[in-house]
Amino acid sequence: MISPKRIFLSPPHMSGLEQQFVKEAFDSNYIAPLGPQVDAFEQEFAKEVDVKYALAVSSGTAAIHLALIHLGIQTGDEVFVSTFTFAASVNPIVYQKAKPIFIDSEPSSWNMDPGLLEKALNNRARKGKLPKAVIVVHLYGQCADMDSILEMCDRFEVPVIEDAAEALGASYKERAAGTMGYAGIFSFNGNKIITTSGGGMLVSNDVNFIEHVRKLSTQARDPAPHYQHSEIGYNYRMSNILAAIGRGQLKILYDRVRRKREIFNFYQKALADLPGIDFMPEAPWGRHSRWLTTLIIDPEKFGASREKIRVALEKENIESRPLWKPMHLQPVFNECEVVGGSVSERLFEHGLCLPSGTAMREEDLQRIIAIIKSFT
Image 1: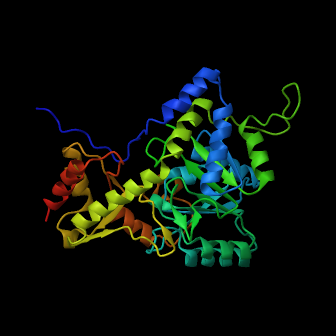
Image 2: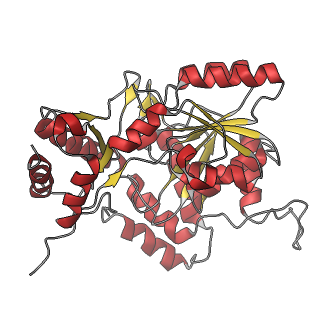
Image 3: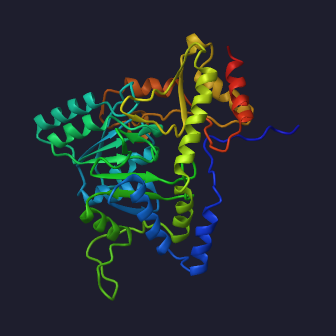
């Protein structure tokens, strides 16, 4: 018996433009890391999100790590970070032997709760030990409430790093995700809204910051004709070939955002009237890219749990996933402090990510919807 075609959660979607830039890279023989495609990708990306400087790196994780190093994060320091996220937002804190302090979500955006952040900052101020940074994660294509977060962090003089790995193409009050804090990071992993197969971008309006992390990302070589190093560096740069792919993908970014939103609207129209289903809300302060269509399922009202639906989809060769398991529930971080926690715990318990690939056809969507409706 032939299995039905696999529907992946968010697979790469090439435009055809990528081959032109990759050919340029091959024709120029810039196959080794760095080269004109990297330079062009950085410039084009900075212009796209309206920020002064961009640095192409090997991953979003590398971008966060470089930002923390530049900020002087070290052993024993505390960094506040969203608990409702993927581990890559948190691991670089531990690389620096610092302590993550987890902040829960608020219901209107599923992102970091400004009220809980303020509570945690006031608590640390009274103790005379403020965090060295706050990492705000923009989840599933939606920005956190940045004005509130930046106001209180400015008040306490704590720098903000925006983890916009999932939110390229999203906006907050007409400003691009990742461009409002001290530094912003993006991911081009294979499942992101645009991809270089693997890679990331670090952006900032601070030239000194970008120059320093650029040096760190290339093994911290000092400007000398010989190999000389006065600080520890990393091999974190993006290759010229991957940057060529990124240039082709960047040109169709907003076509992809438009299609992601169309997919969300299709699901919402088909499923929103079912009892017990609530989609991730679009907060009033910005435009959601809908990188993934995500929803919450109340098993008592709907008649089936999130997990039953996920298993049923998988039996039909359809990939779906639970929402992020909060970091404070992860075994590796179970001794870390958390402020709040109940909102993200509920989202994880009942939340599901539906297939959202931009190459999906209407028949693919109908196939998914029919399975979900079969439980009602």
